[in-house]
Length: 129
Image 1 (tube, rainbow, N blue to C red):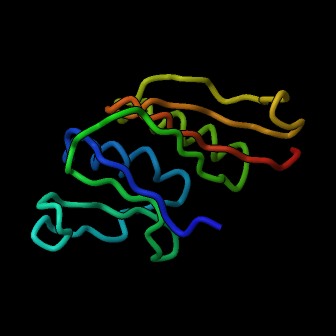
Image 2: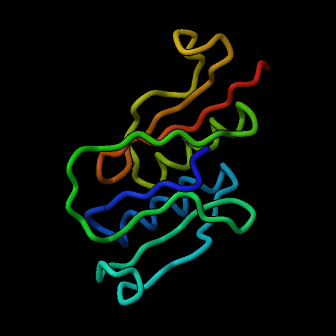
């Protein structure tokens, strides 16, 4: 089981604002922010999650190599739809509208958005509706 994941972003303030809005429909909030003098990198970090546990982190240290793909589990298909709408409104780019992805699994309902750095952020519900 993965406890948390983090990756660098090129513009911390822009990425932070994006994730605050885009992750809200998934029940994720900004749980913790760590200033650069504490992170060890000299750059701030923001941790997002549910129920007070930060499991999704971004850091302002830059140095992007390749985009990453993160899939966050949604409670239902309506939440996937809400994530997609919120992420686009927050400045994300469409990378796959909400819908069934039967090639993954018969009940795989996902939506994909590129964040400001080109990371592929997905919300997925695996429940039959």
